[in-house]
Image (cartoon, rainbow, N blue to C red; front, side, top):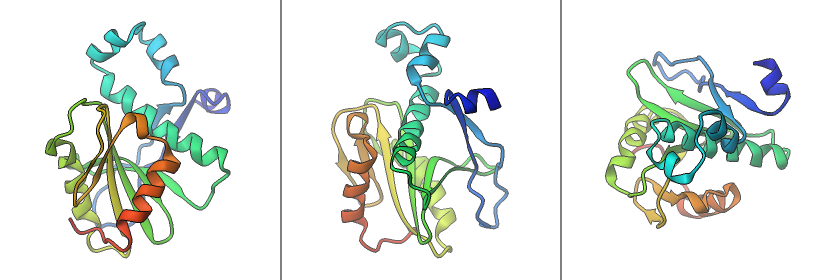
Length: 181
């Protein structure tokens, strides 16, 4: 593992560690910086193969998370902590960007259709943060083409999943929203 991390091939994303009175999964998640390398290692050689591959969702999640990690690293940002959230009951968020007073919850879904089912896990986890001092915003990066802005989360197409664009849009829309759904 240390060789993969030192070579910037893979990285471990730590679990969210704030005391939420929940039993959280603390085992880090492994992500690759290069989703093309992951596809090559899995024998995926064409977009059509990827569309039908059983690990498509995990590859997409790893790509979204790695884009945020690369963005933060390239900007030399150290004020934000990046983590994921998973509890013993299976409630999970793929990425949490944490500052001193704000949490941005990000879910990655490879689905090409934006539907309310994309928000199910996000809503479930948001309830866990209701009694914390954090302000929250939430978004889903999905495999489709059209953005949707709903009262409880933004649904962002993968083509617009450039961290600085997403951050600017979220800053404008959340003003002082809290973690309640």
